[in-house]
Amino acid sequence: MATMADGRILIADDEDGLRWVLEKGFRGAGYQVTAVKDGTAVLRESEAQPFDLILLDIRMPGLDGLTLLGQIREKHPEAQVVIMTAHGTVETAIQAMQRGAYDYLAKPFDLDEALLLTERALTARRLSQEVTSLKNGLKEVWEFGALVGRHPTMQEVYKTIGRVAASDVSVLLRGESGTGKEVVARALHHYSRRAGRPFVGISAAAIPATLLESELFGHEKGAFTDAKERRLGKLELAHGGSVFFDEIGDMPPELQVKLLRALQERAFERVGGHELIRMDVRVLAATHRDLEAMMKGGKFREDLFYRLNVVTLSLPALRERRGDIPLLAEHFLSKYAESLGERVIAPDAMDRLVGYEWPGNVRELENVIQRAMVMASGGVVLPEHLPIGPVSAAAGVTADASLEEIIERKMIECVRGMRGQSSANLHGLMVGLVEKPLLRAVMRETKSNQVRAAQLLGINRNTLRKKLKEHSIDPDAP
Image 1 (tube, rainbow, N blue to C red):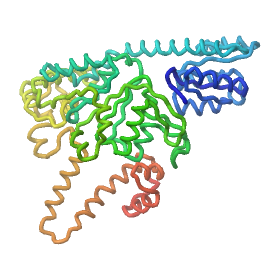
Image 2 (cartoon, rainbow, N blue to C red; image 1 turned 120 degrees about the vertical axis):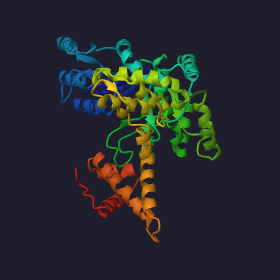
Image 3 (cartoon, helix red, strand yellow; image 1 turned 135 degrees about the horizontal axis):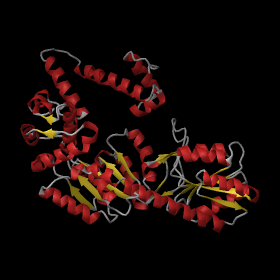
Image 4 (cartoon, rainbow, N blue to C red; image 1 turned 90 degrees about the vertical axis):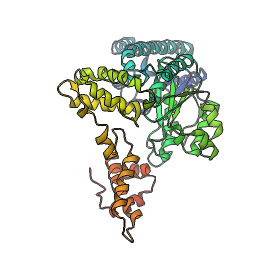
């Protein structure tokens, strides 16, 4: 059984006996270990997954250790590298340290010596990460823009963050889209003991159901048609830190079962794999849906709900705290001043901001302020610079309208235009109108890779080819 409690180690040595001893010894000490015997395999494995430390023999078939060291430091500067060398090549090992290796082990060495040096190297890596985190502290303050406000409901949000951030309890964030649920999740992570470790988010709404399991748990090479390399999932990448499940209410029921099991056992298997991977993560989740109603309808598991809902934090809609809109607007003006230039908001423009309904909440407000700053070349944001109000309302499209809302409005126009027709085949027409741009977008995004495109669409390749031909789409178009 593998564990990730102390880091991921890559061992590279062409001596089978030494490689076997090191692999067994490091696994026994609680590390997750990958062992290879040549330089080509080092490059392949380090591209497939991140390693905390690489034990690298200075002389191996193919690429030598010094050449490998340069490539590793260039592509994966966060990984510590320890060189292994025979007595006669200590000078080369010192040269390797000058090129960025953490230290070296002179052969022959015993397992305890290797484990002690590894522990020191990983401690140094963690300290370096903490320093980087502190340096990024000012940047992260800007990311907490949705937490600006004096309204009593926001004061309660601040207090709850303060009470629960330091603990490891699961938190369920509730509120409309754009209210700042991910921002609060990042704040909970930022002020926790896990702040120097990864914050990894995954959106159940943004990823096709056919790919969500692989995104969550990772997959082994050959697990499915397009799985050409092993890939780590979000749970594995978040080890030691926090994982944020956005729009958890959109997760398919069959995947809810697997997620619940992983959270209960604190372990999981990659798709197509049999090795049990231990995990240590703090769980944060968010939804705009009524999960209680979904549970009654059998669409969301009650046991998963209670696993996620140890603490609930509800965020108010922006229209419910209009007094905070001027504060938020000033915050976003300051945030973008360096890149777009300083701006001020005219009083009548501010009145429009305060009076607007903000269906997209804080996210929409930030978008509107940023666009207004671009348009306000004279330094003052005027009402006409704001893409909101009567003009936007008449068009029925807000600055933060969802794809579903835009499509629905266009279809309403089409339906109205077909009134009085006895047989319009409306269903076929609408499906065709939506399907063609969808196919074009997926083919463009996958660079005309039909295997990947079919997988994203959830159809087989023959069906994809048929639909491309049906809509006169060139399958090889860039």
